[in-house]
Image 1 (cartoon, rainbow, N blue to C red):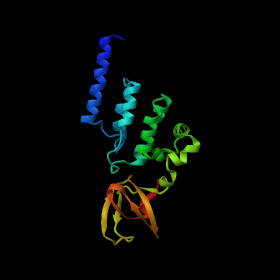
Image 2 (cartoon, one colour):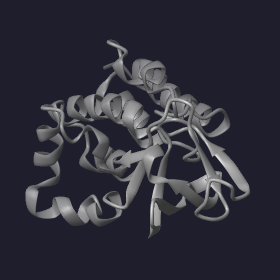
Image 3 (cartoon, helix red, strand yellow):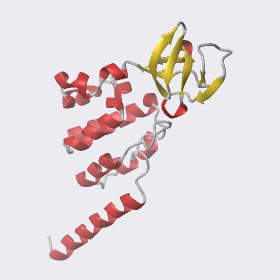
Image 4 (cartoon, rainbow, N blue to C red):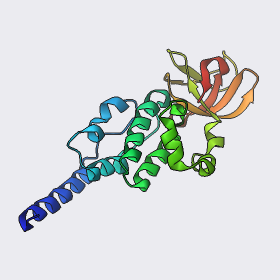
Length: 195
């Protein structure tokens, strides 16, 4: 490699880093995982560019992260990253940010992710006890959070189909939940399913 091409490569990396700081890459997943994969799946993307994508990709908030839709796509990206031996810390960071893409755990390709983490470390790394407390809104019209466990209770907020919530307690046919940025309240069990 010539001195000139080394300088050009160095300058390109500096510009890329500046672009990331000034105008961050579009959010990975966050309700549009399929659209966002252009940055990773680009055939001309080098391993360094793919690693940068993984390390900078993430949701600014969880309102637009919908595990049943996004985890399947994110898992495929991670399987590719693992098979192409991208840095472990970049892959592990995405796994942590997106709850080990747990909603994809029944897919055959998920075994690659599980082997990457290791069977012994899986339960603690992925915080499975937390994941087992999560529910996802299943009804197409979404769910209404209420301030008490009753259909006539005051409405707190509407929660979109596919959004996840952490169950805090059970009150008969109602879950008391923390729906992240949607707020806390109560949701009827018939409107949600296990993560």
